[in-house]
Length: 159
Image (cartoon, rainbow, N blue to C red):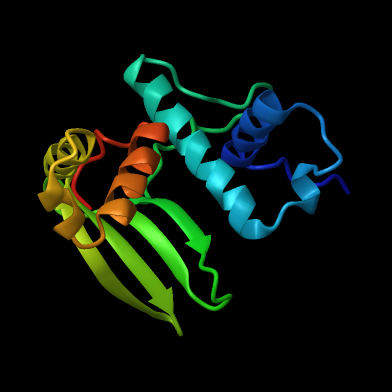
């Protein structure tokens, strides 16, 4: 009995990982699941970009439909230092993005923001405006923006 073919999303995620780091002893099968999921989100970004360019990712030699576009609005999910909680960056409604903390099966939105708001506040930091120091959670907000742009998710639709 042959094993089922691996999911295309997983294959693209591993290809992105290998392209960035090369063949290492820390291979895909040795990565923790949250790290593989992070690579899958990068693959989602590549799939969205390819789709925008008119390219569908399909498995050859099999009668399978094209891979559907990524449906998750979560673009980042990693464990926190406490070892029991996770932080998400996800697309909210309209132009809004959310920072979410997961703990004990519950989610709490820690912060909602727009990219325009974060850009304005980031410009305050670059201009050394004293009021920038008073903006609560600005470091997390700007770090979330880095992930949004790194994964090419700035154009995602409503959550």
